[in-house]
Image 1 (cartoon, helix red, strand yellow):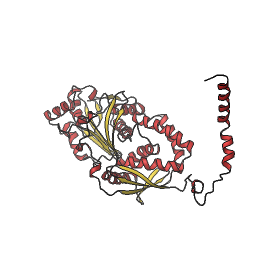
Image 2 (cartoon, helix red, strand yellow; image 1 turned 120 degrees about the vertical axis):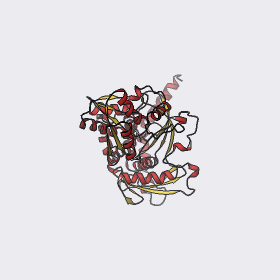
Image 3 (cartoon, rainbow, N blue to C red; image 1 turned 135 degrees about the vertical axis):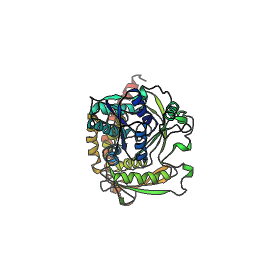
Image 4 (cartoon, one colour; image 1 turned 45 degrees about the vertical axis):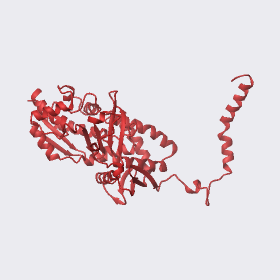
Length: 404
């Protein structure tokens, strides 16, 4: 019997997919589950996969790899898609897909599968990664083939076939969580006019329920990478986890937006990314202090390109590697500390410092100690305005001949 590796989340779609594969395709299913810090009950997911019909379940703890090789590069790039999506789900997909490919090759599989819909972004991310790393593998996407038209029909199928799924009819949300944040869609969220119900949020409290007293956090960076939280050195997984708890308790990190999907439709998306919002804010602020105007402007444009590459599944491409090389140069001097105040959903920078700062108080001050040579400004302006003065004189000549 042919074998297939399925990217298994333990949720509704992939649990139903295991049973459906055995029934429709007569395949031996290997369920591949990656731990990216989703705080899921992985032993329960393993049992659920086996009970649904998986021959084997592979669980990999990829949290350190996720942060070091995917989240930190995205942070150094300031990668944010459109109006605020910090790419928490998107940046995890190439790592999961790589693990899927590795498992398929190791187990001698001819096929890989994912539980992505035909109009979603994740199908693009999974299949682009497979194409880049193992183009000989064939991809099967059950949600593009099967008979179910709604999540409610999937739930009915699961109940009818004794498949344990962690989704109920009264809460039919699709939720993806990892260290970098949560993505929530479907159900009542498909109405853009409707406020997200309280039970959609997992990582943040409501602003009105947040503490009345703000809290300050201090984040230390070394060459663009966060290395300390409130003066304590810690690895990336722990730092993000602790910052998620602090910022989430103060309602920081909620995002509700209409975004443009890769397939060409607009979608209402709700995200929670407490640590990501705080770290992206702090990183940008430190770059303002340590990068030149020209580098900052060029990097801002390339940050959008980097975000687009992550969003559209083009992680394993030459362009992304080339952008990483540029970004690595920009991060040499992004070292220092940033202090931020978190209060009822807001994240405000209140202090920053760096040993490589381009800010010079002696030049910037208007008070005592001003070292700026004000007399030099006259000559500077004479040169600066040469081109503007020539244009002004030309306009006068044109108007003198009746031009308008």
